[in-house]
Image (cartoon, rainbow, N blue to C red; front, side):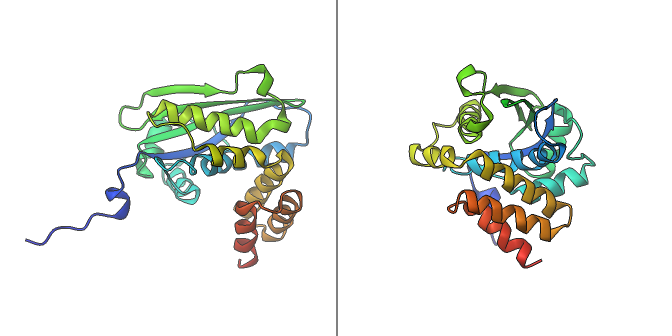
Length: 220
């Protein structure tokens, strides 16, 4: 009998991680649209940072959104462990990460819950609890810290040093404009998305994800 070929992801022994939406837990000091954009952007930014770890397989953010839609979980609603588990299973993920953020006039906190999709249990709650790393201007470094704590929570070795430095180097303004681009792209406004991606590239010309986003919406 001929062997049945497994899908490529089934042959990949790395733990699959899906990053879901992050809820705005109460933010002040910037316009409402910026905070709305971060609800779209933070999952993508965190997923991009995690993807630099060779031992993890990060579920594509588009596949995560599709899984959320199938499970009727909205981007703007709070996601508990049970809902996160359902989405993780739909996205074929071993672990799922979701949580909340708060920006209080520049003091930025992110709380991320790492959920085991098999048991439905919260494995770990990680955050940038160090008072020296709560300035919004340090968003790249905050995301890097969270990524390091997430990979540790799922039993992986530390993030590669070179990639960690690259992630920390992206300025907060570029990350914010990229988040705006994602928001407008998701909402079906390619013109505004392109403008935001261009602004991100103006701030940080080496921003690969923003360049990819601009290419996507130009072809829309």
